[in-house]
Image 1: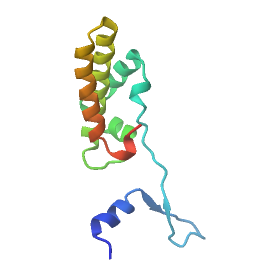
Image 2: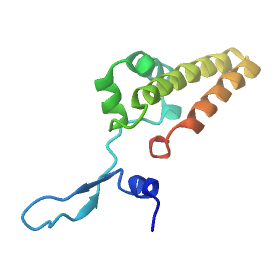
Image 3: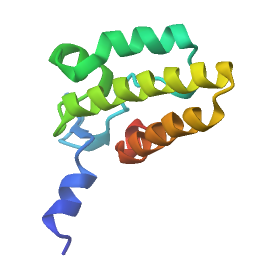
Length: 122
């Protein structure tokens, strides 16, 4: 028998098919998140992303970005905004030749990325 946590995890992103011929079959639900690859964004795009999602206070935007209302979905959104902000700082430092400082900001980004749920990583 599987522990309940394993079953919950396995069915966390599943839905029951409906319709006259479905007979309650469980089908996988496609990922609904819209988290972009922040490493591929320009400084302007990162700043806009940060401004839009800063603090994760707007629950509707957080839901749209994450794709569901999992535990701490607003905190995850806030973390992504922090990633964007630190990525901008790192990019600016590299432009100015401050490599040691840039690496510090990049380290912050790496820690944030490491803490993200696997399905939201790029």
